[in-house]
Image (cartoon, rainbow, N blue to C red):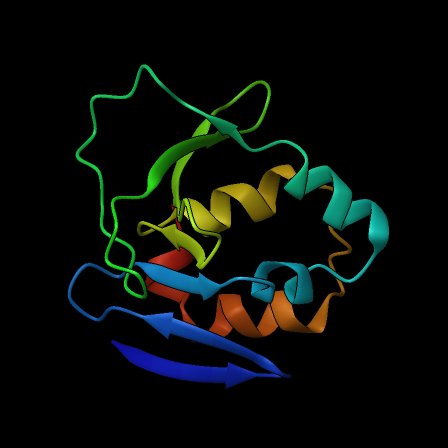
Length: 122
């Protein structure tokens, strides 16, 4: 994994699978307004029907929960049960960002899209 720091947010990026790990609290730093934070953080729901293999948390090494996000189009991400952070497979972070009414002038989101162009695009 390669670690990038963008405006106080450390983003861990796997060059092999193009996944992105955000430590606890880092997703909140990406979202600038309280409305954006509430919209994203309150909509995570554990998906008990997923047959996708559970990924281990890179910090505590325990299996993470499969969590779905979104109402119309569900995005399945991995969230540490101990609250260590969130794992986004290639393209998933972009899907979450695109479905939230995030300010398109958000400088961190713009930097993320520039740095991880291939990983974030669908």
